[in-house]
Image (cartoon, rainbow over the protein chains, first blue to last red):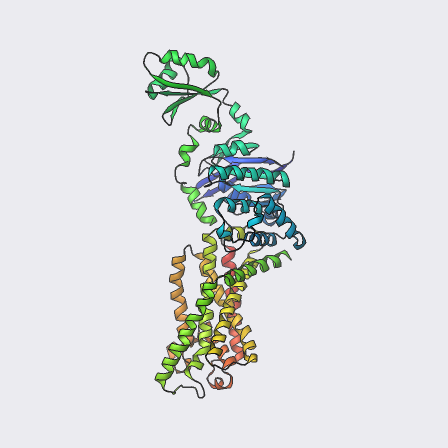
Amino acid sequence: MTNIIETFKLTKSFNGLTAVDKLDISVESGEIFALLGPNGAGKTTTISMLCTILKPTSGTAKINGFDIVKEPMQVRKSIGIVFQDPSIDDRLTARENLYMHANLYGVPASEQKNRIDSILKLVELEDRADDLMRTYSGGMRRRLELARGLIHYPKVLFLDEPTLGLDPQTRDHVWKYIRGLKEAHDITVVLTTHYMDEADKLSDRIAIMDYGKIIALGTSDKLKETLEGDVIIIKANNTDGVISVLTEKIGLSGAHVINGTVEVTVKNGKSMLPRIVMATKNDIFIESISLREPNLEDVFLHYTGRTIRADSSREPHGIAAIQRRKIR
Amino acid sequence: MSELRGFYTLWLREVKRYLRDRVRIVSSFFQPLLWLVIFGVGIGASLRGAVPIPGLTYQQLIFPGIIGQTLLFTSMFMGISVIWDKEFGFMKEILVAPISRVSIFLGKMIGDSTDALIQGIIVIFLGLALGINIDPMTFLASLPIMLLITFGLVSIGLTIASFMGSLESFGAIQSFINLPLFFLSGALFQIQSLPGWMQDISKANPLTYGVDALRNVILGAAWQPFQVQPLFMDIAIVGAFDVGMIIIGTWAFSRMK
């Protein structure tokens, strides 16, 4: 496998705040690669640099063999981008938007019609192709943006939070289209997300990002294996009591409270369950206790000590806000 | 080649969007109509035929001025498309495309100029309907002059808009630039009769030469004794202004992120 993207100590700071910190990653040709992390982790900044929208403060990257600093035009021809915020002209029809994109990216005039017809079919918008974009729903616009990003046959498609703000059913659809487009066009997809399930179900490899750094990288299974075990979930009347029993009597570390239940990662879950019940039976009333396989949320927690969800509910902080203004 | 196609596609977008906006086209009749009929007839009547230029009614005198005013207001207003594109995100799609900022600026600018030219043509037909005499040759000669006037003005609008974040602030700038340029262009009077200081300001106003060029073409011999500059000088001055503004506009677009 060859690397279609390689970054070399890629760094970006805004007014002294380091948004992306000496990033070294490589993306293999043909894979779906996810940058997973809370808002403000530096995902969009990373993608913006790779797409030549932002200039790195230091370091560089190569995409399809071209340097993002020295050969931005060649890089731009090699990539397609679907931005986090909508970026279509809603006074034009879907077909007109696609033609415009094809012309901006120098697609030969003789091929434009065929490419546009077939891509419209792929995202199932051919019946609505001649309607103005302003009559489209959010999910349909997203599908058209995905289609548009592929009209010039890019080597890499960047998707910045592709399903942000979409309802669960539409998200499933969009995932399906992303996979379908990837198969049909044999491209590499790099996406950012703060949705665990999106990274988990859609991508081949996941890089977990926090404060501008990659803190873990691998397939979803590999990342979960690093936890070496199972997660035990305990619902009880006294969560603090449960935690002190777990730490003091059983010697488990890393127990924490999420949404009013105690979670703890252990090596051998099945044999641990009876021990926990025995150890707590005198002081605490346990309502329920269950066992599950670790998910990416647990992986994130394991590396950062925080949950992504708790972070994501907050407004994007400093850097994301500054940078979103700049891109606009 | 791909630059040319990029330029063409951006030009086409501006024109398409304009032609689809029926409300804007219909409403564009209205303001010049008010100026020509109410203001033109009203002031003309109070002058009781004592228009300082022999052989011309007041309405005829201000007709080229109202064309100039329409071109000015429309051109400056076009800047709003940049703010819209920023607001609705489409600007990103253009800015990350593999085409140069020069092509992006020129495509948008000439597209907007084309729209403003259509507005100008509408005013000419309005004049015809009001009985102002314009022969086909005069009409054809006025087209390139109108286009030349719009290039510089659209460039001002686009440049200002590229620095602005919101629709509201753009509106404020408009009234600080549009009305002074309009009043000081001699669109409603000839500038020779103005006091010296005001005449000096008018002579520094590029629109003065645009209006003068239109008068030279449309009013012909009756205007000649009163012209600010001969036609070729008008064209040279407006052209030089255009070149300057296009350079500034391209620079403004190249620093946009």
